[in-house]
Image 1 (cartoon, rainbow, N blue to C red):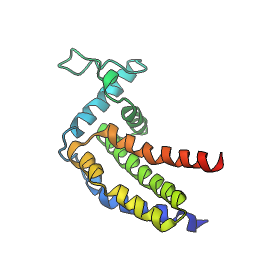
Image 2: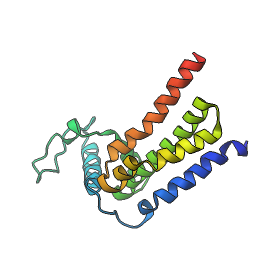
Image 3: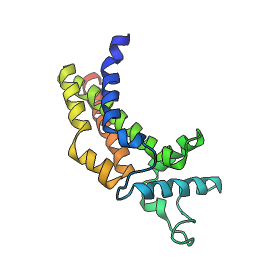
Length: 169
């Protein structure tokens, strides 16, 4: 039983090594990372005021508000709100979404590649390459796009579900 979880545990440790800046105090500078924290706070404010689904962000745009969540992905902020309700700050909630989505995507890629090629070594290699892909690293550390980081987690999950559907019916 424990043997079954050794590889996902090792992959999680590799993810933590790649994601070390997310565990430091404060938030490093990215194109959109600081705005993610501001949007998270706005999402929380609008939910507290009873707006669901959240479409209008009344506190942004110098207090005039604008329909931010009509055109900007609201999913990561709903997930971040769940973390915030468990006691994390807005900053920690945003960081948690980045970290959890990266770890989930890497472990899902391991399971998908292992099942696709019927080889655990191939799964490990695919997961490591998926973790260290230049686009992912740019997305995490330069762009800071929380929506794309979360969306990347769904790619191997959808591939795994599709493969299982094809193989098992």
